[in-house]
Image (cartoon, rainbow, N blue to C red; front, side, top):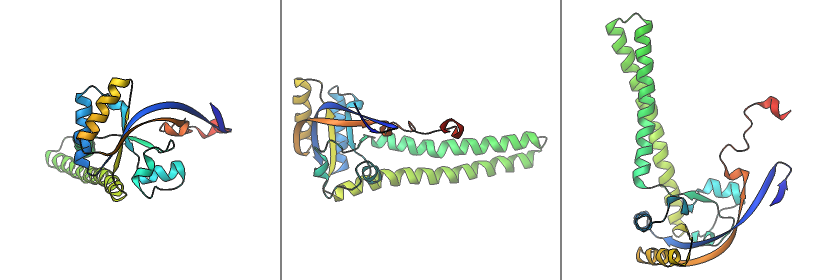
Length: 211
């Protein structure tokens, strides 16, 4: 463990991973399905983070996706399946609609339960919630699509698979190769981990505590 700043610590750890570069999102999804069917935990599977995260982490973007394959500082992101993307979009729509409808129902109670006004309030609340939810769902969809498109434009989508033993290594390499990945190989690498890698880890909710 080494100190990088007064308020930040950096840990290094060894990782042995199978690596593959995919020319399409469909091929990547099929490979992850096959890996999970073979017993690999989702936590051991990761992809390259978004351009914004890359620039924030290492200060520059990769000119080619392949440059990230064996870079110990390449920021990883959790793999998200198409089904999970759709679920996130559905939640983005459904939660604001529910909140909007609940607000309308509250208005009904507050107004003494006048039917016409209550219905109008509930409908208005639901419509507003649906509009907000649709915008959130669109933003989520664009976020996933933009990251995928950017990486494909740079040569492909990098997939890393953490390996626990020799048997897992053989299985992962076989699956990546059969799924159409390029540059399939295994590396032993030293990665860095800091508090910045934990969401909100350095957030200070009470400004008085920092004085």
